[in-house]
Amino acid sequence: MSSRTVIRGGLVITASDEMHADVLIEDGRIAALAASGTPAAEAFSAERVIDATGRYVIPGGVDAHTHMELPFGGTFASDTFETGTRAAAWGGTTTIVDFAVQSVGRSLREGLDAWHAKAEGNCAVDYAFHMIVSDVREETLKEMDLLVEEGVTSFKQFMAYPGVFYSDDGQILRAMQRSAENGGLIMMHAENGIAIDVLVEQALARGETDPRYHGEVRKALLEAEATHRAIRLAQVAGAPLYVVHVSAMEAVAELARARDAGLNVFGETCPQYLFLSTDNLAEPGFEGAKYVCSTPLRPREHQAELWKGLRTNDLQVVSTDHCPFCFSGQKELGRGDFSKIPNGLPGVENRMDLLHQAVLDGHISRRRWIEIACATPARMFGLYPKKGTIAPGADADVVIYDPGAEQVISAVTHHMNVDYSAYEGRSVTGRVETVLSRGVPVITEREYTGHAGHGVYTPRSTCQYLH
Figure 1 (cartoon, one colour):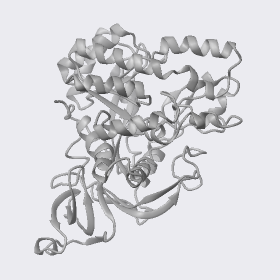
Figure 2 (cartoon, one colour):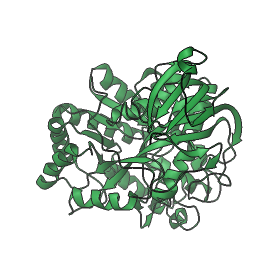
Figure 3 (tube, helix red, strand yellow):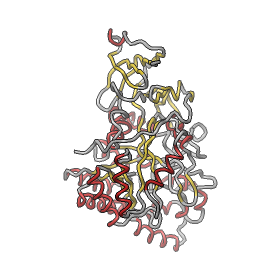
Figure 4 (cartoon, one colour):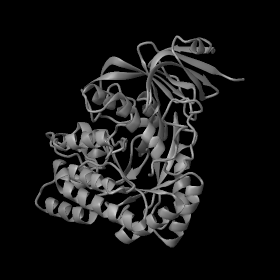
């Protein structure tokens, strides 16, 4: 029994095109597009017709960096796969790529199986996994080959967090060499964690315990230094590199230099670095703890360089690094010691709207919005053209977006399982109206009509963005 849907009269926006077109969906996939009002479009027939007049019809967002249920600093990220993917759907994101974690002394497989168990049957939208590699040993390197074969094609390493996720340069080089052979992509948290730990210790010894010191010890220069080192190690290994959550203009400069030299080096930034700053970390009382994440928020002047990097394609992707901790009872673990504040911000629900506001503010074009939020993350992580575009054969992950609706972002109205919003009180124009995931309505005219278990695990091919 086939099911068909027609979306009529909207402005279809992809990374490459804008056109007034009707979209025919059949059995969960895009079957055809035709210019609105033409005989071809009039011939589309279906049980369900969605009127998208005056609306944008865009691909569902692909958020390539989320941490649902992540254990960190003695607690867990407050969004489960169920609550986090429901919030993603509300924000027009229809695919997340989360991070399975290898524990030191354990296998990659054990970590991956644990994350499959957390997610399976609980997700409102589709999901995939990257693998955090915390313990590079001979067995680990062999397992990387097996994971690539089964669709886990990217591996995250940390130059930060000694004693937790940290890898030294030798371990990083070995993993990069393996990736150069098996087609995997190394994702790097680029901060000099060894040096940062010295600065943390010295700050606390001086009695500098407030949240704002989190930003002061995690210096932009130490992000730039680690970014430079990661690029050189990748160059030695002959491997591509993807640097996550780039926040500092000095790090953007390192990426731009590498790309100008023709290297397969890529950069991601996040809405918090584009819209928030150290002003937030310095909010009075303990309010700044809400904004503690790593890499940290930077002084406001870094924002212009990040936007420029997105325009010049020195930065290719905007993901959220969604890793929420409640202010009450979780962020508060760091009262009197900023180094004990769990690192992470909520944002999976806000990304598409904030980036649409950036279109209105003149930072990026409409097509670039779709490119950095949908198409490129799908390409980067081997999900394209199944995800990230509206084209025949693609999954019918489609958002009907009202570009004129005004809203105020607030914890009172958001759907993330966290007691504050990083963007509390911010007015934005543009709002998700209806969301289809593989042709099934999960948000219908601002009502949640999805369910846990609709979202399925999606294996990935290797990076499709290499030159």
